[in-house]
Amino acid sequence: MKKLMHYLPAVALLMGINHLMAQNPIIRNQFTADPSARVFNGRVYVYPSHDIRAKEGMGRPGWFCMADYHVFSSDNLTEWTDHGVIVSQHKVPWVDSTSYSMWAPDCIFRNGKYYFYFPANSTKVFNGRKMFGIGVAIADKPEGPYVPQPEPIKDFTGTKDLPGIDPNVFIDKNGQAYLYWSLGNIYVAKLKDNMLELASEPQVIKELPAKGLKEGPWMFERNGIYYMTYPHVENTIERLEYAIGDNPLGPFKFTGVIMDESPMNCWTNHHSFIEYNNQWYLFYHQNAYSPKFDKNRAICIDSLFFNADGTIRKVIPTHRGVGQNKALQQVEIDRYSFISEQGTTVEFIDTSYRFNGWKTVFNKKDAWIQYDAVDFGNKKVKTILVNTRSETGGSVQIRLGSTSGPILTEIAIPKTNQWKTVTAKVKKPLPGVQNLVVISTSDLPVEIDWLSFR
Ligand code: FUB
Image 1 (tube, rainbow, N blue to C red):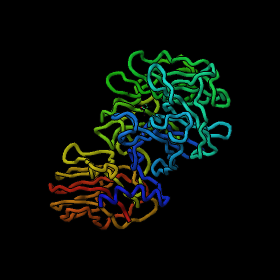
Image 2: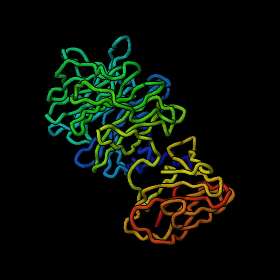
Image 3: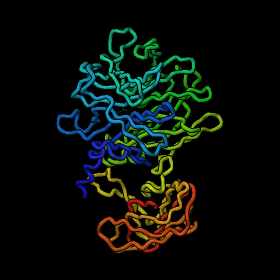
Image 4: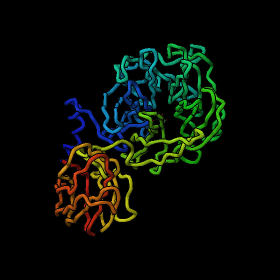
């Protein structure tokens, strides 16, 4: 069974099935990091880095290891399509194809073309270290195929490669494009209309906190305010901060923290913002599938809100993430909205293959977990399916809305060492979008992987 689960993603890809369900993390069959999200033609596209497990001979041991980029898209932020590899270190002429250094990218649309910007090590040296250059690959469609330019972006003299990582491109309302990047600090320069050459001398964005690494810039404009947002090491690891100004080149004023340091101690964070269907979202990463090695990360989304004065309300990372979960699909309650203080834990199903996800473990009577926004549509469901395991047997109750909401069903969980899908009748037909609460009704330990409705 375990072996089969290992191969399922590969089998699915071979069969052309590459739709991924999601809460947080949103991509659940591979490591992803540094999400740059864009809305193109009414659809959300995410261009992340692609962390992989390093093996002998693959770059620097114990460090980031990235050989290529995938792009993912969705129209509901819940179901994601993996469009596969769009750029690989083996197919860009200037990239050192042994470096596994394809770090945080970005993509932007201009004059009928999609420009994908990515940093990677070239074979050159800068300040005594392997040099990071910034490349561009161009496509007619957001998902590619992308054709890499033969050379990385040059500096303003046009003679030397521009050193830098974490490119981010912003096009202002007047059509002027700007390239932001980092190299300890954050830099900006105007781009020519061809999107491939600098149109101004690079300048450092000086007004950001002087101490501590700053990287991963993401610029956006809202209601005339220009937001320079970036991860910064204020203490020991990165947190997301922002500064505002009234011009893409600044000056900016440090304004606040968007997201605190990772509760999982992931040293990096890296983010982007989109507004989609009248809601703002923050894309970021954590090390959810790799708690002990924070160079294997996983991208997440949470909703983001502005105050009336344009300041950003701090975003608390959640498991539930965003979007509705269709009731006929699997509802992974371990990606909960709320959880009881005692008696409920969330654990990996298989620590030797963490992409199998998590399970909810109830150990106490009245322990509960709440999962919000399950969409029943017009379907009058009659049955609930619960994928469960319990060495003792036990029982759970499903309620609507809250721990004291109407009881939908009570389920006897049989004694079983193996995962088993148990079914029960649902008492009331459920229209629309509902919040579900699962409550243990005995002190006997019960594990639940997912539930679903028919
Ligand atoms: O993913 C590699 C590097 O880690 C990125 O370029 C940085 O922004 C940080 O997330």
